Image (cartoon, rainbow, N blue to C red; front, side, top):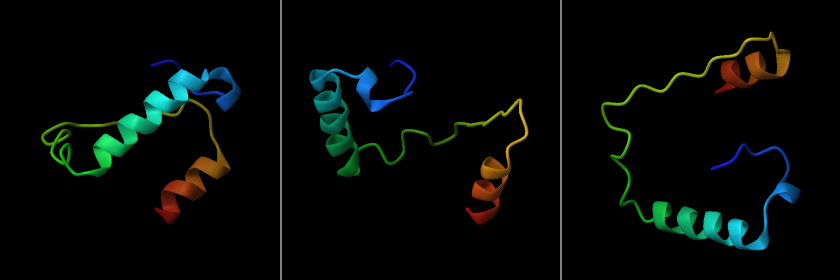
Length: 57
């Protein structure tokens, strides 16, 4: 998948594919897909918005 910058960057077919994937994931078949996985978010710049978002979460 490409980087998501703007929704205008996607074709209608790509948006429909993303929505179809989301519907598939929402039924719970992939609940354990990230089990035993480690996910890291790395930021190279300070951001008040990012800091606030993580504190609220």
